[in-house]
Amino acid sequence: MLLRQLRYFVAIADCGSFTKAADECFVSESALSQQMKALERDLGVELVRRKGRGFELTLAGTYLVGRAREIIREVDEARDEVVRLGQDDELRLRVGYLSSFSGLELSRAVARFSSIYPEVSIDVAAGSHEELYGRLTSGSIDLVLSDQRRAFSADYENLILVTYPSQAEISCRSDLAVRDCLDVPDLRRLPCIVVAPQGQEQAEREYYGSYLGLGSDLLFVDSLDEGRLMVIGNRGYLPVWVAPDAPASDAAVRRLPLLKAGEPISRTYCAFWPKARSGYYVEEFAEALRREYLDGEKDS
Image 1 (tube, rainbow, N blue to C red):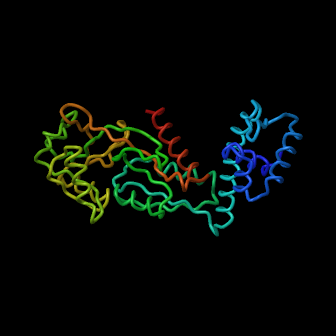
Image 2 (cartoon, rainbow, N blue to C red):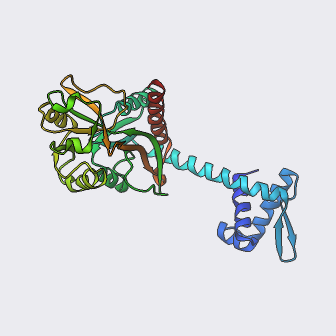
Image 3 (tube, rainbow, N blue to C red):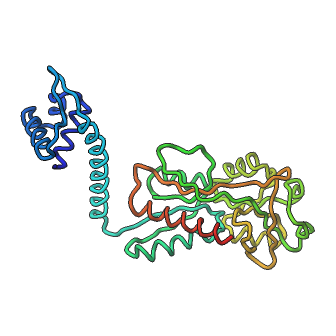
C-alpha cells in the first residue's frame, strides 16, 4: 500500500469520478484505475464497486478513505516540519509576554523547555496586549503568553493556562495596608499604576478603566519594576494577577485581594499561536507552560 495510491483513492472518493480524480492527480484515467486495482490486490479486498457509469465505496473502502485522509494529513505535516527544520540555519523560538506579567511560570517554562531542547534558541520579548497581538499576526513572534481580552479565534490555538483573582500591591506605609482585602471604592483616592509601553496607553486605559472598573486615575509606567518602585513610594496601587499564595515582591509592599463590589476581579492567561504556523517546538513550549501552571496549582 503506497502513499501515492492512498492519495489517488481519496481523490476518487472526493471527486466522485475516476475521470475528475485523474485530472486532479495529473495522471491518465487508465493509470489511476491500474493503481486502484493494485491497491485492492495488495489488500485482498474490494474497495470500489462500479455501478453502471458510476461507483460506490464498499464498507472496507469507506473505512480506508477516512484513515487515508488522516495518514495523508500527518505525512504532509511531518514533511512541512522537516523542510522547515532543514531550511533553518539556527532553530529559534520567539515568545512574547505581557509587560505586566509578574509570575515565575514563564521563566520556569523556558528552563524546562531548554533542558529538553538545548538546540533551540529562545527569544523573549515583552509588550502590551495589543503589541503582542500585532506581532503574532505579522509573524514576528511564534507564541504569546497573554491575557484573554477577545473571543477566541478559530485561526489560533488558544490554550487556557490559568485564571487568577486580582491582587493589589500597595505600600506598607499606606493606611490601607492593615486591611485583609481591598474593594475598588477603597482605592478611589489612589492612582492605579498600569504597565504600558508608550503608545499603548489608550488601549490599556479602556481595559483597566472601563472594562475592569479600576477608575480613570491611571498612572502609566514602562516596566513592572518601575511600577513597584512607585508602590514602595506610596504613589498608587499596582494590580497584579498571580497565584493567591505568591509572596509580595518586596518587604515594603503589601499584597491584598482586589475586589469589585465584593467579588474578585479575575484574569485568564492563555498561550496563543496561529494554527497556520504551528509546529513541533511551538507546541512543546506551550506544553511546558501548561505543565508549569499545572504544577503550580498542585503546590498551592
